[in-house]
Length: 388
Ligand code: UD1
Ligand code: UDP
Image (cartoon, rainbow, N blue to C red; front, side):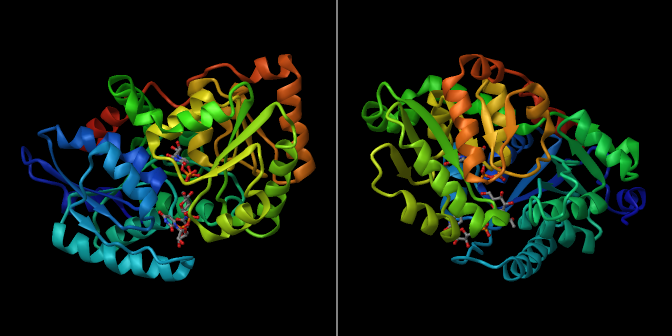
């Protein structure tokens, strides 16, 4: 394991010189959770902020770059259709390493548990550049759920010199793995900063989120079930089962499903085959962040396997049924806003039905909580990066 103190002694910046921070990301959720930090670093004279996007995602990443105004200094543009984990990771490792050789940063920042985050941390470690891990310490305890993210984040945890845990639960997991307590900090989750920022932008410019108006009119009077799904461990049987549950839910005349479909072909093919053309189902392209915030606002409930949505929903008091066997985000469950329902069609249908038909069950879940921080989380991370 990296000796963080030795690394800092060799690579730490001179006193008074701004720290060069290379922020590395490549997918939609990383971009959403890191744009508040990039904004904070850019306006802070203690830093020189550089951004490298891997392009692990393309369209879904570009949507976030466009709305947040973040410009990449480097764009590896790596995405391939239906990319494999090993092909992607190999390309990431060499591509990100080359950028680090050019940039010579004092710190590399990665977020979460994607292939880009893992390769970014590993390339930095190979150059003895200290790594700050945003959203550190999430653990499901099962290396196959979510797959491959549980191993990615554990490996990043073994490398990181600064662990920025979103919650006390995440910090406790890191301490159980013998991380140096002086290097583990509870910061909140920057997704809340992102949500506040986007809500503010929509308030200034309502047109940013008005593109769902036609669907809202088509489904007027119905209760909206918002759906997202993309987990690799659900490809095949899990996805088919989710699709069949949605079909049954959409049989109800008082319900409409709005489902922005992930661009992964393993999701799209199944969902389009099973659900295209149904009267009460809108299969739509991935929404940009303002429109997704609008969907969270108008939905009666969310049915999802997303990590980020499990964090946004409690802040908005929106019930979330999580189509996974386990979660690394127990806070939403503890707060009562989220419930694990797995991918079995009967279970999904019965849990959705319960929420739709039992006002007491619905009211018990539809309460806003703040387990992921106050929206000032990126500023805390910047302060830690300045003083580490
Ligand atoms: C990735 C992350 C996952 C994260 C998810 C967020 C890994 C291993 N997986 O999974 O942790 O939760 O992003 O969405 O890092 N595609 C496009 N355009 C895009 C994005 C994806 O066409 O903008 C298609 C491509 O065919 C691509 C495929 O989706 O090959 C899979 O993308 P990939 O990033 O490998 O996996 P995700 O399932 O998106
Ligand atoms: N999101 C979005 N548009 C969509 C679906 C999701 O902007 O059509 C946002 C959502 O608000 C959350 C993030 O994307 O912040 C979650 O991304 P995803 O589910 O792809 O990844 P995960 O969080 O599971 O890693």
